[in-house]
Image 1 (cartoon, rainbow, N blue to C red):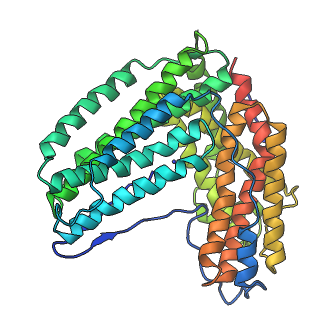
Image 2: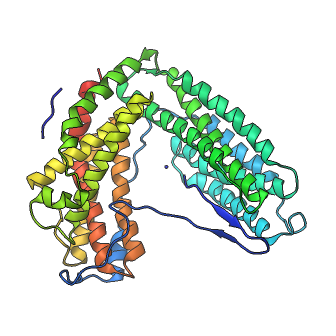
Image 3: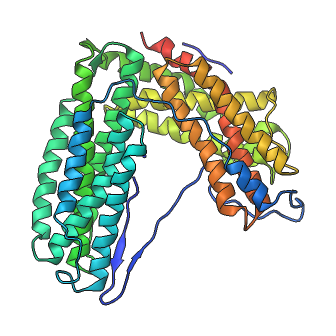
Length: 444
């Protein structure tokens, strides 16, 4: 064919006789932190309250992006697993764990797991609840193992044996992976999800293997248990999805997905190579004018770097039997390339100039919401488009979080960065249907 143109890993340090210290690193879209305006760019007319009000404006709901019914059985099993782990930890720990730092470590993870389990009811029924339980299980597993280690009932050797068994189980599922079903579009999304979970299970094992000495054995055992429960939960989820998919139909998709991934990657290769080599120059090359300090600068660099990185990922997936992930990822590549083409054409009514005031930022968010809602309506019934829309929605959420985080400190930088995020979501939503149709042409 021819074309033209989600679990935080945590590290903790237990200091003898001290307190538990934990750090978390957050990431946002479009190069992360916003920078301060230069003298050439005066502050925009926007107050903290005005920007926070924009962040509070409602976003479109996330679509149900897994075209496979998830029964209550695996969800109930996940709940039982969390509850059984937490049941091993008594409410009062002072007598069994005299060390305050260790006690706080156990309590923190236990309380996190409890709170997250309580939050399960707020999740939509089906796959969202199953996915929600992965992190819940990790925290519960870490708390239970740390408690057991602190009371001399768990050793690193115990965890090493469990991890070895898990490694064998993951390899077995991976070796036997084949793709069947009924509709190819739906199968791509289901297998991409299962493949991602298998990759997470392997990553959990890799992180466990790299775990080095810690200040205490309790910390090391807790970390190993976290990785073990992560790998176990994601393997169980992947296995469930794979088994459920076999009940949908017996049509084989292995050859079809391999052929489609190869053709789609070939189709975008030249366009990827034509992208600006330096993302710092992307804005000027795309818009043929200076873009410093404007949403254009951030939007262009993000689209170029994401398209190139996604292409490399899709290529790697195609070479490592992650065919569902490859097809789904190259959909994102085409979406980004079409967005770049649209920006170059200058035919959109995007808010890409430096905003003058809060009204401009509000207009940018409203445009993103309208574009996403239109794409949701027009793509209803398309599993590929619905999955991709969830990715596009994250840009709106990132824009909102930038306003919430930085409006008090630097309203101008927050407004520019958020406007870029809203613009990204808008142009991606407007080109999504064309990108989806391009993929579907290769799926027979």
